Image (tube, rainbow, N blue to C red; front, side, top):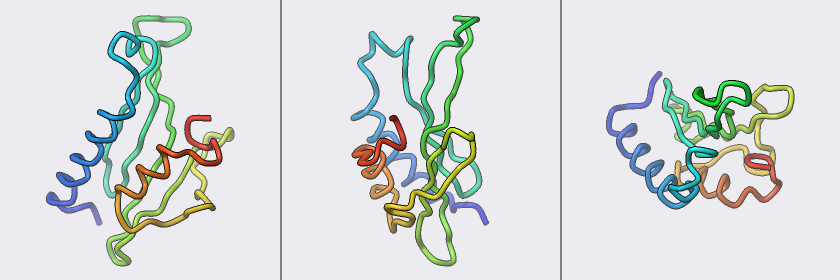
Length: 115
């Protein structure tokens, strides 16, 4: 089941606050930037860089993901490992609010998200 329209708007608002606080300065964004997408009941944060061969095209590298479990009322937290698969973030596998997920990613205590 997808996130409701109200929850999407609230989540987008929190994600925009996160980006405003954590994006690189404007003069560096052509080299590295961060973004997000909401798909179904999941939110994905990714890093954006120029393709190493074709500088005009961009590469999005997934960094963190949270999936909302509506029946339980919490977000499951994931990080992308070297095998390019999502793995549960064992230090804090579930959070009750999207803000908590974004706080975990910001702190990156174990260097799982942005290295």
